[in-house]
Length: 238
Image (cartoon, rainbow, N blue to C red):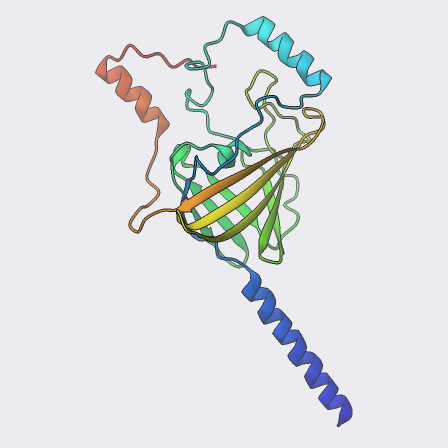
């Protein structure tokens, strides 16, 4: 009888712990907009390694002059990569849809999809991609997401990266008197071949008003419309 009571007590305690753990998890679902005023920025002077500084100098020597107001790979309809997809303050919404196994992030700009696995740790020999391979774990009320296998970007890019890049994000949600429901994401970029130390940015997003949905954005349509309308604007392609 004594052992039976002990077993029952242990099971009840474990069940309560499980309920508490589930309650600690936050719901990030919904449509969000970047809060430009509250969010951080990439450092003006980034801690590039000597090797990356040399590579960037060589790249600029071979490709300058460049007008960065027009000559930009994203203006050329090339989608964003991580972490820039999370650190841009461009006012395009994105939607988070959460399931027990995976969190999906759907962006309006370029129509990109990001998948964050909550259970599986291995996906085999997955090739590098712009969104990389993301796995997450809960630390109390924070969701910690680690992403690797991100497509590297050349030395001349504004945000160069290497195959070793690893991005760690800490997601949390709460309320704010000014903006209402608020999503905060601390983004830390680890990339030893590129930076001498991790680069950290703290991003803030606000919940979209009721009725706002992520729309359809087709970058190529902009180029088609410009050509049809006889626009003199030129968007270079690499």
